[in-house]
Image 1: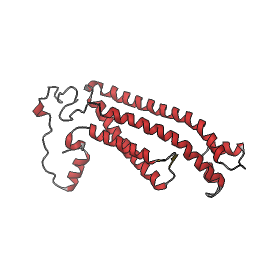
Image 2 (image 1 turned 120 degrees about the horizontal axis):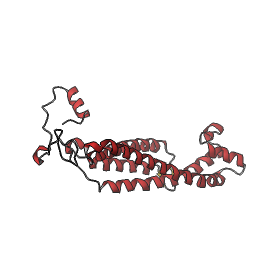
Image 3 (image 1 turned 90 degrees about the vertical axis):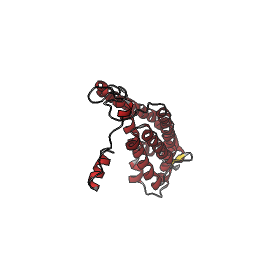
Image 4 (image 1 turned 45 degrees about the vertical axis):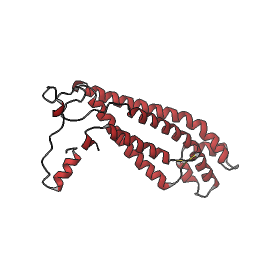
Amino acid sequence: MAQGTHRYQTIQIAGLCVKITGIGILLDGRKATDNTVALVISMVLIGLGGSMSVVGSRVASEASVPHQDVALVISLLSLWSRIGSAIGSAVVSVIWPNKMPGELREHLPASANETDLQTLFSSVTKIRTLYEFDNPMRQGAITAYRNSLWYCLVVALGLAYINLFAAFFQTNYFLGKQQNAVTNVGNDGLPLEEENRNLEPLPPSKDKKEAFLRFWAGGQ
């Protein structure tokens, strides 16, 4: 896609759409899904979409500043990514303690005491190691986890739409011979005319190996 158009906005928007789809698959009405196939597909889509989006963001940031500022903009992109991750963790750390204990009290059997509740709240793996699958304690804890996780997923889905909305308004520079798209100068430091921005087509590949390596490197 980007190889043919020499632009990056499309691949970034496509990646964000794939990521949103992956997050949406995790929702099952007012609960998080417990379907194994849906969980696997979701993780694949979120990883694929996220990687496409990261590539788009990285290329966009590097193309939009002069060459001497590339290191700075890469650092800023990493900084804002860390800040976003920290904000997400902070939101979850507020939602989880406020929702999970109440859900456990509601769905665990009447025989469960406060110690059982604290044990299951502090470690999700205890559900698997302490109880058989059909045990009411395990089933109640699974329901509580699904109900609580739903709130986290809804927030993640909403925030993902903000990224998608912003991607439509970013500058979609042409990636040709320019050292940096924003300055529109070549590697020799001279301004490029419009007709010289396109890359010259490469000669035909001699074999399949060369064609694959060219494609992998982003060549024509």
